[in-house]
Amino acid sequence: MTATQWTATSLLGRYDEVRGHTERLAAPLSPEDQTVQSMPDVSPTKWHRAHVTWFFETFLLADNEAGFSPYQDTYWFLFNSYYEAVGPRYARAERGVISRPGAHDVGVYRGNVDERVRSLIDGLDQGSLDKLADTIELGFHHEQQHQELLLMDIKHVLSLNPLQPVYAGTPAAPTAPDQLGWVEVEGGLVEIGHRDASFSFDNELPLHQAWLEPYRLADRLVTNGEWLEFMADGGYRRADLWLSDGWGRVNNEGWAAPFYWAEHDGVWFEHTLNGTWPVDPGLPVSHVSHYEADAYATWAGKRLPTEAEWEHGVRADSERAGAASGAGNLADTETWHPRSAGPANGHLRQVSGDCWEWTSSAYLPYPGFQTAGGAIGEYNGKFMSGQMVLRGGCALTSPGHARTSYRNFFPAGARWAMSGVRLADGGAPRLSTTGTGA
Image (cartoon, rainbow, N blue to C red; front, side, top):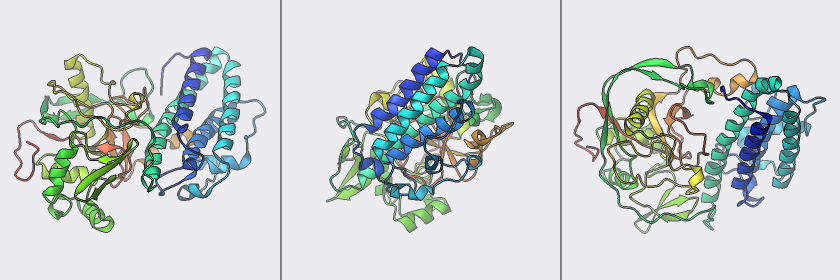
């Protein structure tokens, strides 16, 4: 939802910017790279490029282009993700067996739809433009979500290649971890949710009140070095640290370290989009599930924040610091990987970018939430079951897409997303007898 006043010129400029960024992200990849589906949660790069194009064709052109007909009838079926109201769709887990259309043909499809969208927008009067602007801007943010997924997915694809290919970039110089600090946050009756006229997804609304007891948030994310201590203390072997479902995953799937870590000759290595390198103890741990995040917090004698605590704490700290919360290590830095927190400054660090941060909150509707009518109403509301909320953005999140009220969500066992851990605690220190999270 948005109250942005768009003109045809500004809307077309933003359209070209978003669409062009997707193609720039895909440019380092071969056609073969773009076809691989390495597990059911991963979609091929060319599928992402086609699906976001299908979105504009389906939700914009279909109802507004004179004499509309789909670019290709079967594409309507192949590139629908989960919109039941639009019609049947190809099975998600089998997207990788579709060798045609190839990456080049997907590019032709993108070009065709782009030309038609530009023509449509150019021909709209201001009244019609105002009516369609919300749908078009939703398409921008939908494509930005898939830009992040494109990078997360190709990271997994390349991780399985014994040639250890590099997507882009080089690793940062090793960093020394600093001492974990804490930021006290006053409790009380606070407002949660999106609160201005800029774009937001429907799940960020409505603005509502929540009561919070005084608490504190760790001033940075948990590091690889701290995670190594957790592992050395039997973190993946101690049932007392784990939620029951998480302990089942540990045993059934053989979890012994974060998702992209592997041990060779006593040294832990981590696969990144920059290549495979020894684990840097000063960088944030990433690609851990909610189950792992919760187990670590238990080991450290702390807990994960609720999403209301995270949002209010970040907002309040930003106001105290007089700094915007939107700056951080997002995809525009082109690091493609979390970076160290930087010097302690008495305020929260790494709140926008680096890693999505698990909360203890289940993904549920806010009080008064209403699902939009039609197929577009399937965007968020239908997933409000069996998911946990993450906040903050990551190093693969497109610039302009992260915000304090943004609610990301994944199942508790998901590990392929770039997710990390920020600890929380009550207002008074609670000393740990089993870990280092004092």
